[in-house]
Each structure stands twice: as structure tokens, then as C-alpha cells.
Length: 137
Image (tube, rainbow, N blue to C red; front, side, top):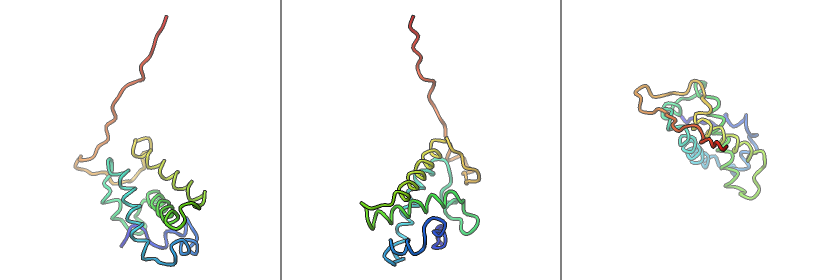
């Protein structure tokens, strides 16, 4: 079973609109969903156990990760169909999801409940210092 199901799209886009955008061909969706999941994994992989996160199904899936994946899938489908005429709503949802992923990657956002490897293979260490101060008399 896949991480994203056809029923999950109902909260983001009308079924008839998604069907129209995909050309009523559901065989395209699994490949696009795979690309979207790989995109999201790229952001989450440094800190979280992405294999465990994306192996979950049904009600045990993380709602925010699912929503981000769906936003990316809808954007990819829209870009495939009409790259010059993508709805502003779809673009904004994609940008918000990407910004959220960047926040998670930089540890500014720490979503609760995501699987972290217990063997210590992935940890997030920040380094650096304060900005240089200039004192002039």
C-alpha cells in the first residue's frame, strides 16, 4: 500500500479537478507521488528515519507530512499539464510546503512524533557563532 491514497487528495483539491488535470489517467499518479515523496525525503532525511515515516499507512501517517506530499504532487501534476497556467493557489501551497520543509531541515521547526533513528546515525548539530561585532570609537 502506498503512503498517499486517492482519497487523501479530497482535502486539497476537488476529485474532478485532479482527474481533469491528470487527463483521467490514474496510472500517472504513482510515478508523480514517488517523485514527491523523494522530494520530501530529501529534506527530512538528515534528521529523521524517512523509511519508517513513509512506510506507515492509514491513520498512523503524519498529517503534516501527508499534506506536504499532496501539495507537491498537485503542483507536479499542474506543472505537467499546463506549466504556464498553474493556479496561484497551487503555487502558494507548494511554496508554503517547501518553506515548511526548509524550516524542518534547518531545525527551526521540530514536528512532534516523527521517527528518529535510535541508533544515533542521524543527528543534527548546529555550529557557528554570533555575528562579528564592530566597535569603533
